Image (cartoon, rainbow, N blue to C red; front, side, top):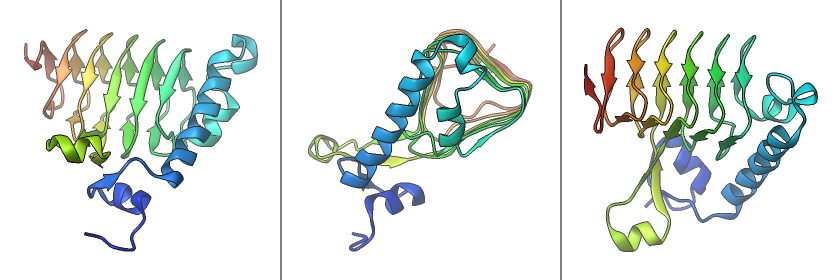
Length: 184
């Protein structure tokens, strides 16, 4: 199955890959260092986004603000458009592309997951997973403690209630809440 193809290439393609891999370990270590620097810098030195995170991310627009603490898995798959705001305690496990549109705000403790772990327990323990992107439109509000699962898209202008668990796409302009999230 994909013999000769690196685990990173499989991850990037959305295929099943083994997350227990030296190249991926090194990429996560680079992200951990950048996250640590961002979280430990005094606010005046950190600014809206620390230089370490800015260098790590795929794209950061103007006037983006990431409060500390923040955590990400790789950083290289994160794209934040202009005026995105991530409140304290946000986590983005970006094994796949995560795009957050302009003027979107995430409340404290929002979690975005891209890794889908294998359902077979032996393959799961062996580190087999696949990466599915999360796409969030513009002017979206995601309430504190919400969890966004792999492969989900949230349309522009949508509102996600605090503590909601987003298991499927949210259409533009719709308000959802609950676990699993449903239209309110």
